[in-house]
Length: 122
Image (cartoon, rainbow, N blue to C red; front, side, top):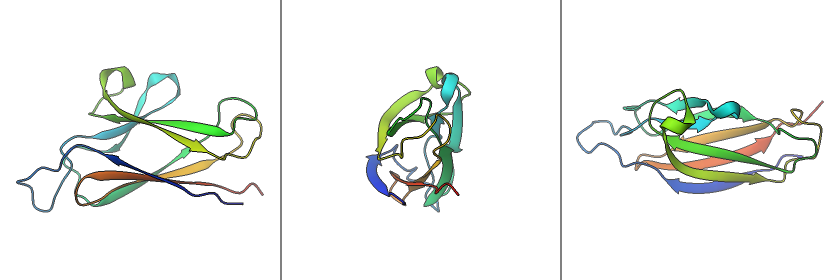
């Protein structure tokens, strides 16, 4: 069964002088252990998108949390926290088994939208 969840978040404004429009700051997500994984670099042309795989950290968890950050760096603590996103409806299973593919899309106005789908286990 596939579940799709949508949410919208306002991210940093686009550079006004750039043609085509680009991101004013990098966008990253926090990984376990406090590291940061960069999704989009500063100056990336928009619209753009990226997909990351997430999983649960404990047995039978039914939700995931995605921490979206602004700025470039290797550690989440050194970046600006933009928002926490909650993804509900994850199939309960052993830790690390559910794979949830999260797509991050930035539109031409700099708005970030997330969609998530759980990959089916074979």
